[in-house]
Image (cartoon, rainbow, N blue to C red; front, side, top):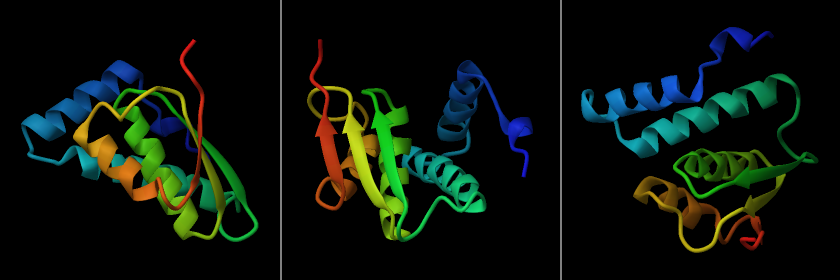
Length: 116
């Protein structure tokens, strides 16, 4: 399946997310879950989820890291072996990203890459 028509630039996504949160009352956590679910669907379509699969998810310090933590949880639930790479020090910036970090921190392998 071709997913290229679904792409949006970073600024466009940030604007759409902001509108959904401010104007529509959508929780950031829901947006992160939906983004992770969309990636999981693509991986599943390609046969890259489930038992026997190995995934490495990289996450920086911004809100996008919540999508990665949510994806890590979903991949783990599908039976995949997951390593999440934390490319920042301290706790995630947003409350929603912190929610997903707390959800996966004890169930997936987390590697820290120290700041330069």
